[in-house]
Length: 461
Ligand code: AMP
Ligand code: ZN
Image 1 (cartoon, rainbow, N blue to C red):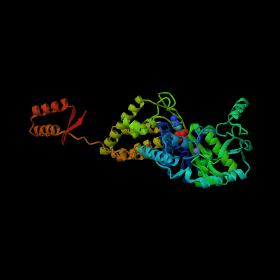
Image 2: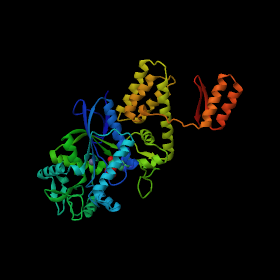
Image 3: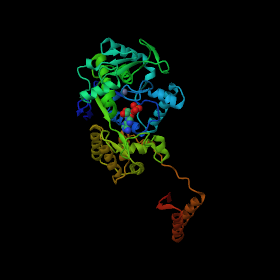
Image 4: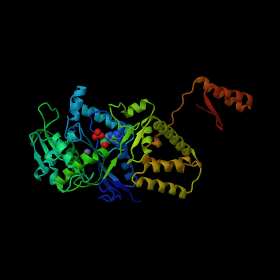
């Protein structure tokens, strides 16, 4: 079946045609590991997860690289401010390598908690300095840079066009204003690719230009090239990466070999909190562990997230999380009912559901529509193991890990077990008055009571 993806590069939905027939090569911009990932960041990786799972559903093998930026990302995405890692090191009174290890670990654990399908290659910037050095040397040799005392800048005026993703059209007055901010740049779009490290900078390496560290944008270009070559299929990131980071990656790749590295560029919209941007100053940052403490396990956040297309902004609210929690419980319950079902279902019915689901995910990862097909199957009144198997197949994309789900067993108090046993005995003896009395007793103690061939079934209300 055809797959269509929205491509930021061409600004339209296009049929996906990978370079290799059965293997997709892709790159995702990973986190800068200087703080706990918040649920907005995690939305970006849930999008990456949907993409991976959809491609696998379509039978593709994947070679997927995600970087971990543990050096070189300055506080602004342009070239201003301190290195984020150095700033965190000062804040926590640790060295930046300890900061990197700690937050890399937190990030990878969070992905695991969310059942995110992991990229085949996780590339840490600090372990790829050599390949970055080789990459930047070639850009320099090709004549795309200029030097100031302590920085090597990419000269965007050497390109046929800068800004192919965002169609940049910089106005003259903006130009002047931004040159004032950084007088070293010849043009405001120019950006740093290589920094000479100041004396007190802790993360630095011996390179062709003395003790240096790489620019953030260069890291992704070099690591993408290292594992995926000059051209690959898909590049992903959040929408904030479109105007600066990804434009700069494209500029560097053109400087390196004259090519735009990825054929499809896909970007996920932002998650907002109560209609506002997530930020520390608004005190509305949530982590996945905080949500868990509030009674929303990570799968609830996955359910919440699946409710919106990745190109739509979503608004995080407690009401929406409550709705997602209820939906997850219903999904699990409905799945278990099908698992125990005995109905025989015509194969045409199964095929029809399968087609609808497949069409939805292949339509630019339309997860809300795909999920509506899952609900149709769940709610089908004929309970059948064939449906449970179909949901298992859908779950390879939705990622709720339903196969592994085991309902929590209830630890019943002794006296309740005794009441249930007494009631079973009374029913065996056809003592209906006693059986009714015991049922009322159980209800008054907060249990629902059902009768089955095997005896009394109770559940805590
Ligand atoms: P950073 O560590 O800041 O580079 O961010 C990691 C990823 O999270 C990037 O792909 C960002 O685009 C993405 N991101 C950051 N904030 C949000 C948000 N509120 N909603 C969705 N994605 C976000
Ligand atoms: Zn990147």
